Amino acid sequence: MKDNLVYINKLIEEIEKKTDEVELHAGNLDLNLLSCLLEDRSASITELSGAGIERYRLLELLGSLRSRDAIVRARLKVMRSEFSRKIEDNKKTDEVQRKYSRV
Image (cartoon, rainbow, N blue to C red; front, side, top):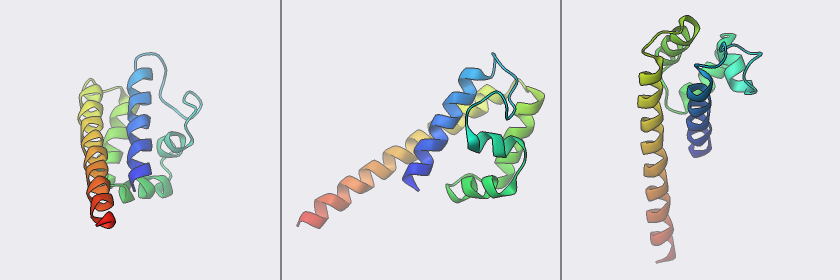
């Protein structure tokens, strides 16, 4: 789960970097998961749903990316901050678990 969150966070950063520079479709980003998503393969959407993203939010985000909606960057920043927060929470949980496992 934690690895998925880190990967998704990096994926979002990559999308943010390239949104202004390239068309967002499978051939332009060297990220297999993004390629699958943009081709609308439900297996990849399900993988991300398992990492804590609602399916409808993913589809909404992808629709926005395709139409180059002006709100995309704001949504990506919100999602990135949500994932950063989840990653930090996971780190704290791991630290607490390690601390108590030593006792």
